[in-house]
Length: 201
Length: 336
Image (tube, rainbow over all chains, first blue to last red):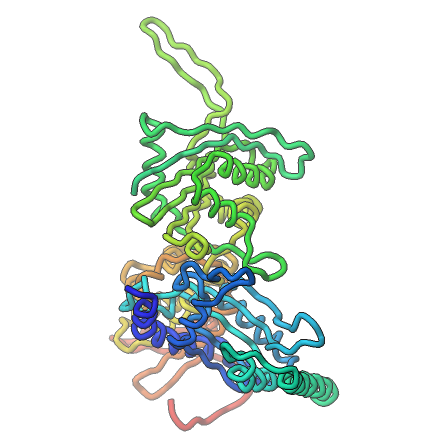
């Protein structure tokens, strides 16, 4: 069976169902927290999986020798909050119900760079949400979860297909434009954060 | 599953010691009584190791765990030197309180699937009695290693792709509920792991099953009463490691009640272990309500209900409830 066939089977027979179950589980466990705009979970599309599986490292070698077992964001979930000050309470609540093997604050390496920002986790898929009818071999061990503010979410969604288009190298001007929108999003979060301190606390 | 290699190492209690003792080790031959005993441990490990555990990420939040790396490397090579590194790590975590131990690393496979079982036998003293035709010789013996029912520890990892599959495994630590300091030694300090199911999730799962059993119309009244009565005692188990099954047993509920709760849960999770977080349980089953056929509803905190309502059996199935107190508030609602 080819990688495409393997993932298509996994996608249709397990990932779609698991994503929905996970979304419900997240909503239930975060119920009652304020300033949550949206919680969603979705399986990685077949195209994006195959694209990721064929990625190479800096030395030009294939990055994933066993993509089905190595790629951990086959299910990606996101919790979108209003303000940066809402992130810690969501994080604390998540860590009560999910077991993390990775938790990172993703920020650009340099202040001159643009990139996604946000809190990122790799969690074990809880056994509660795995229906007994699904073939266990098709169930990934992990899912990825990001907590983002509305502005971080808006930037990452709007820029993803433009700035990370395969086989397209951005011009200097295009890079500056993307960096500008990133900085605008970051700035809006900073101002809202200050307003929250002044008005809500 | 076929055993490939067995290595054994004598592990001293050298935590915090500047010059730890050099560890001696050996390979175990695949024949004889010792091999038979270790093969039994290897084959039973997936069932005997009843706690599902997960390696923790490092202090930076990265997907890196020192002990996991050692276990994955040894599982790949089956090499004595790589096993020695696991023994050295255990020695660095072993206090005098845990004492001298004999570590066994048992590696086996079935096709591409591999299993590693890591077991520690504590040292004990004993008396050797040797009978001859006319006499009995008794000798005091030190360094006897036994699969001590009270101190035996083991861990088991299984999978095809070790980097991914070995993030979770199973463990047993007979001291886990008797002495938390010692039990931290095996799962937290040595394996750098914790339970795969968080306390809140495990407790919520159990509380939901209890609530659904109690609220189900078809559940027998005697079972509902037994379970709500047992809930009053649940606070005493806060922080204890339980499964849904052992929780109910420890509260002394009947087999019928236990089966009723089991029916409300995913079967594979009934025996999964977690640490009870009573507050989580309290959130889900805080109130008990009794509805009478005369239209009355009596409500109180589940743990206080039997204390605030006095229940007297009247005639036949009739029950008389009495209570007294000051009225704080009155409410009306649209529906039940």
